Image 1 (cartoon, helix red, strand yellow):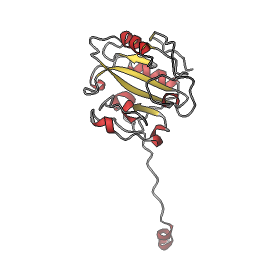
Image 2 (cartoon, one colour):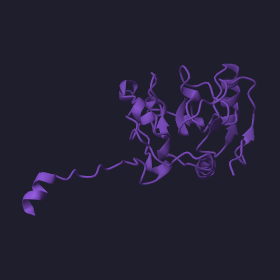
Image 3 (cartoon, one colour):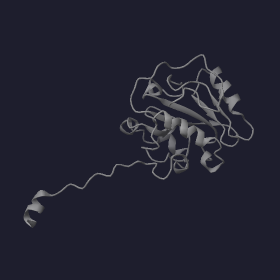
Image 4 (cartoon, helix red, strand yellow):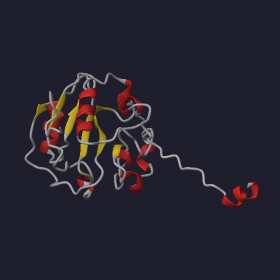
Length: 200
């Protein structure tokens, strides 16, 4: 059963959010908070996001494993433009402390299993419909498909329709969601009935 608060994470509830969710496929968006994870704590980033009135759901330091939850997933976070953050039954926004130029998937990923298990409980598919995010700064002008967004699953901030930022950079999505990350739907070959009729 899905829990509003990630077990084992510290809690720093935000007084502000972007309102209720609008419904649709559940998804998660991965952001980068540009800072050195060896120096900066998830708690300090969470506090800063609350001060800026831009709270995410989770702040994660993948090197230390520290996770701080700011909002429950039933409420929209404030990191996306317009009502994008309210799209889906949940649209979990995760700020990862690191750099868009140096993929955080090249570091330790302490705490990732706990985050993924929690996302699983909310029905977020372990798929990355838009494929791997482009490297920074090419990701700033990446294609942002509304059709792929509608499928739900995992997305980089640079892949969200309406976004202008280039994070999280060229992360290895298979380290997050596994080898089946793309979840590609291979179309069935169309039968040429006229050819079949000739053969028969």
